[in-house]
Amino acid sequence: MRYITAILLALGVTFVLLWGMQTLITGGNNALTEPPKGNVLDFIRLKKKQDIVKKERKPQKPPKPKEPPPPMTPPQMQQANPNASAVSNSFTADIQADMSLSKGLSLESGDGDYLPIVKVAPVYPRRAQARGIEGFVIVEFTVSKTGAVINPVVIQAQPEHIFDRAALDAATKFKYKPRVVDGVAMEVAGVQNKITFQIDG
Image (cartoon, rainbow, N blue to C red):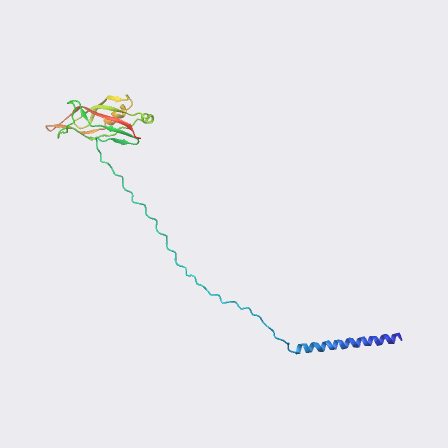
């Protein structure tokens, strides 16, 4: 009896399983053939039209040329004056007018009288310039027939022996127009020159 009951239950279970499977297969075929019910909404996102703005680039202006430097004015050259003060670096040497002691003061300049042409400024002694020493020298000499200076000597100096050599060296380089009497050049003795040494500033 047990075997018969087990066989009948097995057959019943098998039948139920086969029937269920057949039902599922049939329902699946109907689902594929039937059209879907309801409405399908399809969302499509559209991009807004972007306005294209064209930027016009203006060409840059070239930089203004730099102003040219102002024209340099040439330095004014002073005319040589034999009786003017001569300036060299940081000192001045004042060469005063000539004085002739042979006939007192010979300040008259006749057509035949001697005249200074070239007067060279003396070199300021370095030691005196470094110490700030100032002074003057009176030099006496003879103007030759050719206008050269002969035998210059120091007759007075303040301070003594400081500027003597510089004054004598400068005096030997002086040039003159000689004195002419009746068409003949003559020597002039006792001509004096005072040379003053001063430090600028």
